[in-house]
Image (cartoon, rainbow, N blue to C red; front, side, top):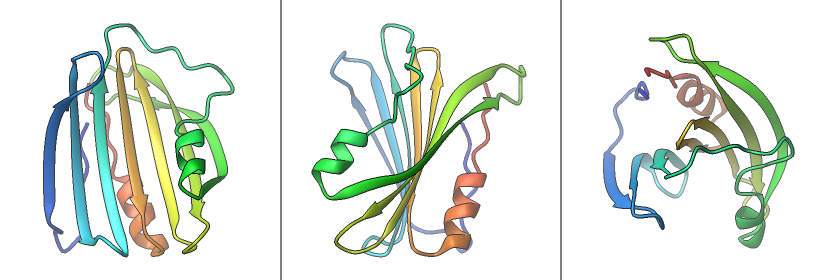
Amino acid sequence: MRLRSLDPLPPRFEHTDTNYQGLSKTLWTLEKDASKEFYSAEATSYKEALNPSPDWIPDQEVLGSVGIQITDHKRFKLRTTSTGTEVPAIATTAKQLSTGSILSSIYIVDRRTMISVRARTNDERHRREFLNSLTMIR
């Protein structure tokens, strides 16, 4: 996975950890002002192939528990640039009820890896540029 950065380049952070199965989990974050704009990409590996159900909406319960409501979602396929393999993806738009901030996410299921890309900003152009910068390499 590759992401183009917003211009000018914001501070970047990478955090590597393990998930509940003891497998790799890496989080990349980009911040201009954490209270206003926050961008992230996360890749988590699992032991078994992931097979999301047709009605699956990622993080719906978790977001709801902290006052964020999903307002829109759609399913689509992404094609890898190197092999042309298609992988399932879902895009969601959510709104933080207390502040009105918009959170846009794309979730990609690539066999045993879940990739999530998120942009929280009220700047529509920045959100669109960041989410459109996703390129599947493998």
